[in-house]
Amino acid sequence: MKRDGALFAAEEPMRPAAAVHDVTMRFREHNALDGVSVDFEENVITGLLGRNGAGKTTMMQLLAGHLLPTSGRVEVFGTNPYENESALQQMSLVKENQKYPEYFRVIDAMSAAAMLFPNWDAAYAESLLTDFDLPRKRRIKKLSRGMLSVVGIVIGLASRAPLTFFDEPYLGLDAVARQMFYDRLIADYSEHPRTIVLSTHLIEEIADLLEHVVLIERGRLLADADADDLRARALSVSGRSERVDQFLVGRDLLRREGVGQLSRAVVGGRGRHDRDEATALGLEVEAVSLQQLVVALTNHAGAISPANPSSSEPADLEEVSR
Image (cartoon, rainbow, N blue to C red; front, side, top):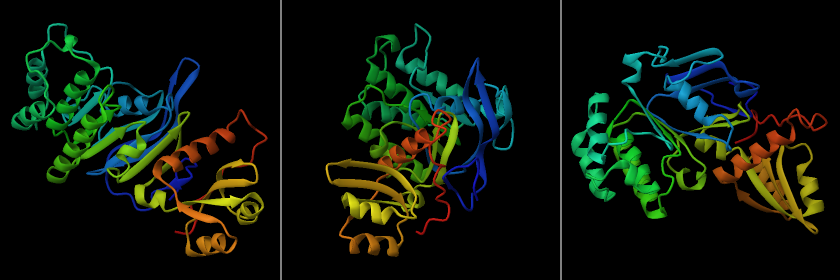
């Protein structure tokens, strides 16, 4: 099934924990979201991906009940989340610029979270504070950027909220601390399944965590698909430019780059016949990583934006061989 002209679309969605239906969110003269419809499946880890300003944070704020859409409908567990206490108790939104009262210490933030979230696990929160070596009695305003991120991570994980959003949750964290977050997240998710939505620019780091991908660009939906299925619908070919040209005939080109007489292209299709034909032409064939595919789709969408009306129509890859 295809929604909103997305290049990829999920075929058999499970019951959604959250959804936006034809949602537009307008700020003055700018549409942060423009007629977007997408479901976030229950008990699935979804990556909400896109460049800065694509609309990711706006979508999370709408789903978390912080904003009302200009038009369209937002649902969380079947109800409108805006000013809905029962719905809000089932959600946790961890954002990069989270504000706390001036006098709050780390333990005060944990105590407040315990009152807000019905599923709060105090013992798990304590173990996370120890794992991340977070000083419990330090004022939050005195924490480093990385330590402040850890406070949000601990609250997001220990809340055990049925719907948990992480919006760039690890600014200031080094690679070791980020990996600890990923490890704790996947371990706890395995024992306590819930719906988790991750927004990040570090796509390669979280690629193995994601079960589903939602990609937006300039407020519009580009991709909504199972993560493995999405990766399986494209491949990269490289070699002499004239051979690449031959291979591209009749195929969906997403991205191309070249140096001298050599070219590399990302195209839709990873069927056996595609690989065989590329090999027969003497081309090198490689799988496409999630990050490469996100970059290709985003750049392709930019090339066919209203700012480029003479560009070709977007590739329709719904029927690409797998």
